[in-house]
Amino acid sequence: MVLIYSHITSPRLQYICSFLFKELMGVDFSITIDSEEFRNHEGVKINYSDADIHPAHGVNAFSIQGNSLLFDEIIIRQEIICFNVDGFKAFFRTHNSDFPFDIFAASFYLLTRYEEYLPHEKDMYGRYAHENSLAFKEGFLNLPLVNIWVKEFIKRLKKKFSMFNVQLPIFNFEPTYDIDIAYSCKHKGLLRNIGGFIKSPSSERIKVLAGSANDPFDSYEWLHQLHQRYNLQPLYFFLVPEKNGRYDKNILPHKDAMWKLVKQHTGKYSIGLHPSWQSGDDASLLKKEKQQLQAMTAHGRDALSGLNDSTITRSRQHYIRFDLPNSYNKLIEAGFTDDYSMGYGSINGFRASVASSFNWYNLEEEEETTLRIHPFCFMDANAYYEQKQDTAKTMEELMHYLSACKEVNGTFTSIWHNNFLGTAKEFEGWRELYEQIIVQAQL
Image: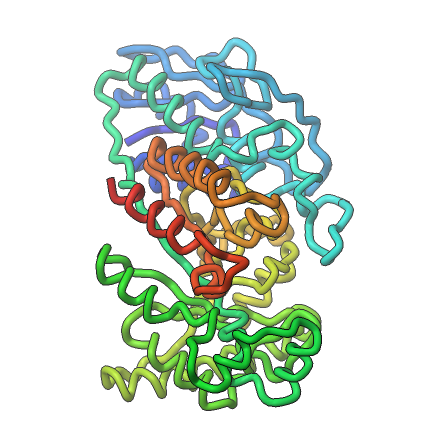
C-alpha cells in the first residue's frame, strides 16, 4: 500500500489519488495527516507537502511539493506555465521534489476539465471550443498526457522503492457507432426524397427506392460480419427524437423501419442513446428519448433473446454538444451511468488528456459522482469534415492514436457513422480504412 502524507486532505486529493493509484496503477493507497504514522510507515510513501519528515527507518519518502489547487474549494483561473520533462509537456512545476511537477494537481486539472468551468468563448454550435483548451494551445491534444505522466511517475517511484509493484490495465479497443442518419433514401417518405432529388439529382436514389440497389448508408450487415470476423463487441448509439429538426434528421422512432433497425442490433450488441440536439434545450426530451429507446430495445430483446432488462444507461451527445456541469447533471438525473461524449466534435484528440475511463468529478459540488466518462480520441466526421483529410492521412492519424493508447495500456475508443461505412461514393475507401485499423488494433 502507498501511504501519502498531506497537511490536510480534501475530496479533490482523494479523487485524483484514487484514479491514479487504484485505477491506473492497480495499487491501494491511503492518505494521512498524521506525521508520526507517516514517519513510521515502512512501505512506499509520498510526502505531498512542504514538511520535512525524516523516516524512523528505511529510505526517505518520495517528495512532491503540493500545489494549492487540490485544497481549494472554489473554481478560479489558474496560472499555467508549461515546460518540457523528458520529451513531454507538464505544468505546476515543483522545487526540491522527487518529481518535477505536481502530478496530482496537474492530472486533476485536466481530468475534471477545470478550464471548461471558467468563462470561455463557444464555437458555432455553442460548445466549448477546442481552441480554448490548454492541450490545443500547448500542442498535446494528440496525447494521453495523464497516462504518459503516470508511466514516468511509476519509473521514479520504483527507483526509490524497489518493492513497488503495479498492475497496469490491459490495452482495449472499443469500437462505437452513432446512428443519426440511418438511411440515405429508404424510409424517408415521398416529400423528403423529392426534396433530396431536387437538391441533388441522382439515379442511385431512384434505384434504391425502386428496390434495385442497396441504400448507400446501409452498412449494418457488413458491420455485423466484420464484428464476427474480428470478435468485436461494439456499442451503438441511436438518435430517436420525437420530431426532426435542423440537426436531428434521423428516421423517426415511431416508424417500423427504425424499430426494426434497433431490434436487429438489440441482443447482439450494447445499445446507448444518442440524445438529440433538441434535448440539449429541453431536458424533458432526454427522459422521453430514453424511454422511447428502452421501449424499442425491450421489443428487440423480447423477440431475440427473451431478456426483460431494457434499461438504457449509456449516452453520447449528438454533435458532441454538452457543457459542464449542466449536461452531466441532467444525465445523472435521467438515470444514465456511462457517457461517451468526452472528446471534441471539431477536432480529434484527447479532450481530457487521458485514454482511460474515469468517474466524473463535479467541481461545483466538490464531489466524485458515479457517472462514468469514456473518452474518445477519434471520430470519422472530424477527420473528413473538420480536418478535411483523405483516407491516407486519416490512416496515419488513426495509427498515431492507436499506438499512443497501446503504449500507455489505455483504451482506444473510436466513433464511426454508418454512412461512412456504407457504399456512398463520397466515402469511398473509408470502410476499407476501418477494417485496416481493426486489424492493427488486434496485433
